[in-house]
Image (cartoon, rainbow, N blue to C red):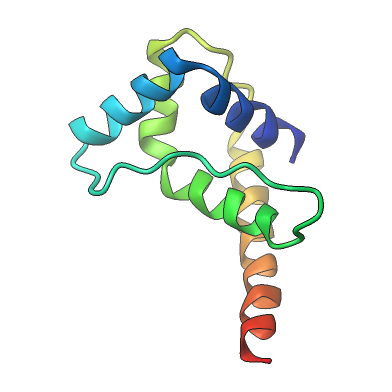
Length: 99
């Protein structure tokens, strides 16, 4: 989770990073162009939304990180953990919305 938060914070704080991510999404035909979602400590489901968007933007995100020469310390195992965590958190979010 800390690796994801670090990357999301980079794209939220860096104008150059944000522009590069938007540019990569446009080049890859993503429509609409989306920004990263940062989790908020007081909102439990914000972690789910952060992971969901992170996975959704995986390809343009990795391309932007490579173009910016930004350290991408995420392994394939990390991506798998993010995906599984997102699935688990989705169940809680779906259950909450059914209430």
